Image 1 (cartoon, rainbow, N blue to C red):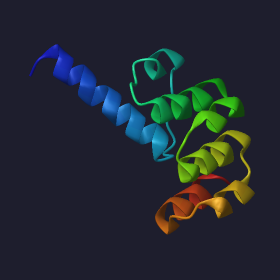
Image 2 (cartoon, rainbow, N blue to C red; image 1 turned 180 degrees about the vertical axis):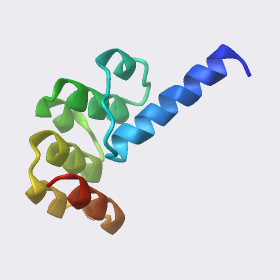
Image 3 (cartoon, helix red, strand yellow; image 1 turned 60 degrees about the vertical axis):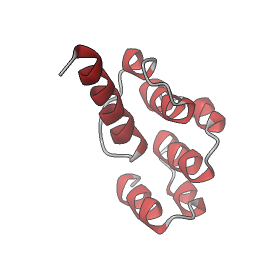
Length: 94
């Protein structure tokens, strides 16, 4: 397995962890290696604890998830349309 493949797998894993809302500390430098703009903004929002990055996320469910996690406000979870993602959000934001 090449180092490029390993780096791509690690970046994808980090993006998934951050996007899916599991408790992981995102490092700002790792966020910049993510190519997908929405995942990068989600990562930066959590790493810097700044909601402004959430507003740049295009997908509305991911935007609401980001806002709920960063602002620690459960009411944002109720704006999520996907039941699975809504339940994850409610479980994470207490």
